[in-house]
Structures are given as C-alpha cells and as structure tokens.
Image (tube, rainbow, N blue to C red; front, side, top):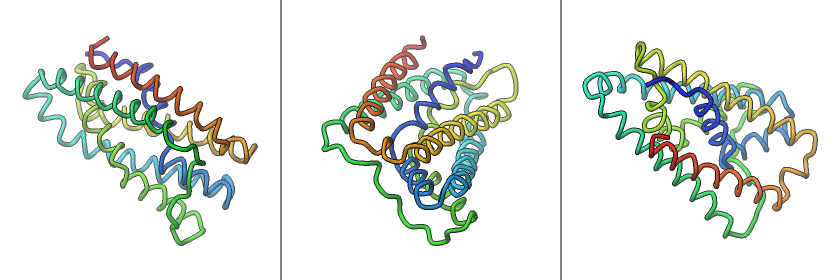
Length: 207
C-alpha cells in the first residue's frame, strides 16, 4: 500500500500537539532557560522518537513479510489508538482547567541536561511507543524494504514533532501568558481531540 504522506504528517502533527509531559517540559525550558535550552530538549525528544521507530521496525519487518494480513490488524489497532487519544483529550475538558503543568526537575541547567530531559521524557512516554508499534506500520509502503521505509517515516515523524515544538516554544517566548490561559488551552484540546477521533475512524475504516 502506498504511503499517504499528507495523512501521516497530519497525524503526527496532531499527536505532537496533544498536551502532556512533552509540552510541559518545553514550556518550562522556554520560560526558565530560554529558546536555546528548549531546542536542546527538542533534539532529545526527536532522538527518542527515532529510538522508538528503530525498535519497532526491527521487529516489524518479519511480521509484515510473513503475514500481509497484519496490515489490516495494525490499521484497526492504529485507528483505535487515535480515537482513544482523542476521546481522552475531550474527556479531560471535564476537569477543572489548569495550565500545562510543571515537568519534573532534571538537574543540570546546561544544554546536555536539557537534551537528556527531552530524551528521557520521550522514552518514558508510552504514547510514543504505542504509536510506533501499532500506527506507524500502516503508513509503511510495500514497494521497498519495510525497515528502511519505517526508519524514513520515523525521521519524518521526528521532523514534524520538532517543527511543532519550535513553533510552540516560539509562541511561548513571544507571549508568555497567552499559551497558559485556560481558555486557550481548552480550545486547543477540543480541536485536537475532535480531529483525532475523526482521524481514528478514518484510519480504522481504511478511508
């Protein structure tokens, strides 16, 4: 099946936008260390995404080559994952609105400490692993090596995530109070959650 690059970019962009530990870390780094510290954390996050991708692709090739029907199961699983993430985001609107929160302290204030914080936060995020294992495979083209295609998509995933975080940290740096306003945060959750539910249904149905 051919890779739908536009759908993949849209999906990974929305996943990057989901409020969570990653955004909390970027918010903290930007507010307390400036953009350079945030960029180091972004690099660590992207490294983590590549680690998840390679780990998933290493065990993916044999499965796909031995059983082409695995694509159907992975498509359904990926659709369910997206829908559940969207539903979880929408349900969080019922809770009392708060700011993005504070990430755990990481020790060193230098760039290496910021890079390590981004890497550890991503590797400790189960959503990244679930996406790499259950959703990433359905975008892999059959017209070539599965492993190489998976890694290429992982690199694109990292680039899309980096682009969002650069934009996010730029916005935080430019308007430090705007991003943390409850009303803005709730609108972002509503838009992201609803779109993820729709994307999940489309993926599961093979649209």
